[in-house]
Image (cartoon, rainbow, N blue to C red; front, side, top):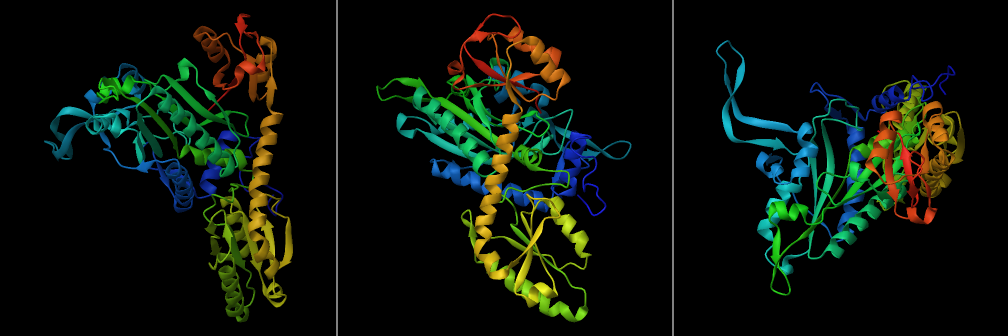
Length: 501
């Protein structure tokens, strides 16, 4: 709460959750809308967060044997047309380049000129263009597996956009692998899903469910799509990452074949998997409060900010020296495998205003240092996971020696809080009336309910309640057989229903 008893973000989560989200992103200086419709400018604080996400995930990828490469932004239209389901799934989202230059028009201004022989699609995803490269690289079983990841941007022409959650252009990583056997490709698909789960829970402090998408929610052209699904504070689900078993569909369309160990020509087996800057939106909606962003310490661009409290000019030099000494002591400490990142905010701005700016940005720890703290060789500490008025004094030496354990306590506390919230808003529901009440009258959450496995029932639920099957849990058959909540037909187990982003 602010000094006036009001929240720093208006409206609050309770008053208008979608607008609260937009205001937190802006107040935290994560991103802003661009002049290009549907695109965003990722500001330094937000991009530093993305860099930390990228660094941590890249380590996971390399530890599982993957390497990075880069492939073209432009994809010939004919490449997309090779895989029928793929082109149908992405056709409405494609941005297409048809000309290669501009010329002066007859009435002034510039007009397109130099029409291309074949239109080029701006990368919506890269299965086809990467597949064309792999078809050249793979000749024998000895060339396999290929385990490559790409960090890139993609363009999908969205009609309704929201910063980080859904934008026309966004940043992501996409892994594309080729294997000798179906079993190897399947193992890769499941392994990378578990990598995403581990990252989401251990770094983002965001608990996720894992499972398979229904045929209606499957990636275009895939045989199986697996996902991680998280619950946001408005009880909607966020698909935070996907991993696709592509079978031989894309190998066939791209011509990825090899001479087998038996000397036969065989099609390869492929996978793809990815997460994007949507993770930042998920982090905001999982942990943020009515005063702004709350950063999980393992991904925070800075762990600690030092706020000098200078009331007299004569104190400035001494206090700043003490603050800078404290910063150096902290930077010598390690947390989560990297040195502590420490900011010293020496701007000529009112101390209270500076504090609120950092609160809204979600930095884990704020320490204030004034004349009395300096004299006592102490600091005044505030934790972002606590109420903004909760502060405590501590000797500088003790703070420095315990800061890493405090950050880890905060990290685990955020995860446990998110787990508890999900548990409170997850319910087993066995009747249609209760299901309707849960989503139509209440605010919803995760409904664990029986489904008969038909597309018709899935569509009826979506049409009437805007509720989708988020995933079929891997262990759903162990949840017990029952009857579909809509049709009454037999069901092997419970699936996860929710409204979603």
